[in-house]
Length: 388
Ligand SMILES: [Mg+2]
Image (cartoon, rainbow, N blue to C red):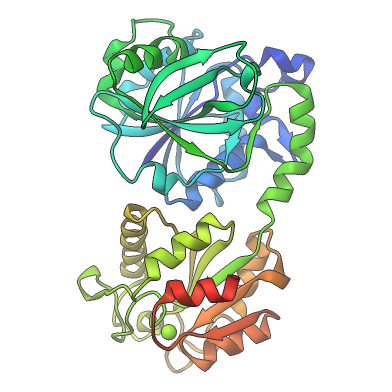
């Protein structure tokens, strides 16, 4: 999955804040705002990101330098003159996949990206993520008929309504409707697609913040850390997510447990982080390599995406004491869990683990969280009972 983030704008409404710093690079709780946008994509399995830069474009090199171990590979495409949101995409056309996500670098909208992209956008068209707000007048209303967008940008209409959330799933063929040079997705492409019946809209209710004006930038300092701080569910892999067939490392050997994908989606949508913590001693024993396990986890992530679900990150222990000596990560040791707590802002008291062995539950106890045994049945039923 490819995502394109528009970060080239001048950010004039923020006044002197953006005199020397592009809006997406402004610091929020110690990190550039853009970091949080990219983090949300990565959690959903997006691993190819294009940054379309313009104003003060060299600033973005600092993000890549400072966070290279936390962020996936980012490609920067710099425009030399301002081209607008449409022109920036045309300028980067040779790097674009057949269909791709587009996000605004000054907006954080917490949607289920896997669900949003679980079916392709309309051929030569696009899909918009929409947000319901109490006062749509500042933004412009979007009117839907079934899932088709009928009208956009109806400014001035007060009252509650759906607005453009600034996240799009675009079929590359739609860009042929844009004129050469400077152009706008919002004012040109999307109204044209709506008129042709090729524009879909899908509403999401998650956290939404646009740092375009000073008051919202100020509140972001508190709201973003608060919404990132969440409980986690740690899932053992073999015997919980998939049948334990001993040293599984190929998709053809992998069988999902009943309700596993649905359980993960259920947790995703209730605001839990979902991490896999798995002992993979088959690596120490030489049965398979780390690359094989990583490839299987990529495959799992793609399969989960078709069910609108995702794992936020996979943690594995490749060791076995008889083959690679002692370690701190092999369950029942709590090392993988402690690493998660170091990597993410987690609410420990509401976090818990589900495993199929006593060693899983013991690892949870050692990390000071609750652990539950899942021995048979449907994982969704289990998860619902534990979170009710
Ligand atoms: Mg197990």
